Image (cartoon, rainbow, N blue to C red; front, side, top):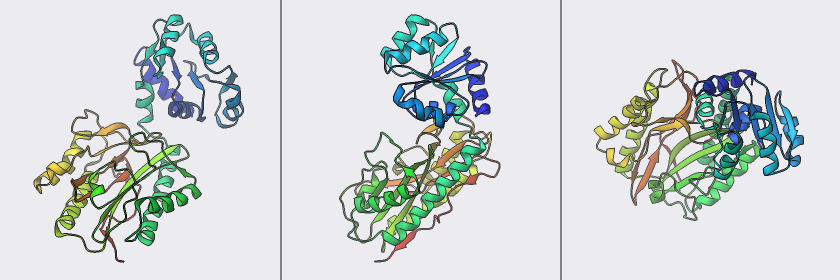
Length: 356
């Protein structure tokens, strides 16, 4: 935790600030070890304070590391207590609330609104974070194995989701709260698989379906993300060909991952292969993204990205092919950037066919 705070302050100094204030729960957790309703304050000497309403104080004291915990009334009381402590400092905050920022600017006119110090620090994982991500990934692999035993023709997507989420909860894995889908998982059979962020539905699996199974879950605060695509019986020759193309594309992407490589080059490695096989128009999203305390973090593995990979970044590589009204295919792993990347998922990427 001490090193994290040093890193946060280092990035704060790059934008001429000596104090960080966080309102976002992910950044609060990263800075203090506490996830809840509170404001986090990190001063230039490393002193860290949590300002929390009374209902959160007990938990904040128990769960935080080396923090002072101050009690304040909810709402304006929290802001007033914060202002008293920082009004003479050069402050950066991740506050996204317009009315709160207006209130802060009245007392601290030069306060800066920026997420850069937080996101830049969070991009590089420490060993504790890597260990948690590895454990989360292992549980997801176990859930893929459950798919091979429990998925069947006639089963609803929602029924499989219930089976998987029951196991996840037993392993202390939880929904990420990702805002782009209403469901905790993506389980999309047949034509539903052509929608990369398909909602889990009441559709029943049919013979010949490909089933995109994207398991994105939170363990001890951290998100692991992986996808496998299963076949229910014999699939079309077009689908089988597309699967092998995605599999090889993902392999090329993984092989491109190394420190100091441009993120866009990883995207290019995957995308060019799919384009060369004349499926380029069906690869409709970026190749990957960072993971950590949120589902999608920096860096973005995209042709638009100007970021270079650095050691101990945690990213995904997830090319896909999506043919409207027919099928979708995605293969995704979470990995840690090293000279020899640590691919955290061990479940096979060969096409698993479930014969019913």
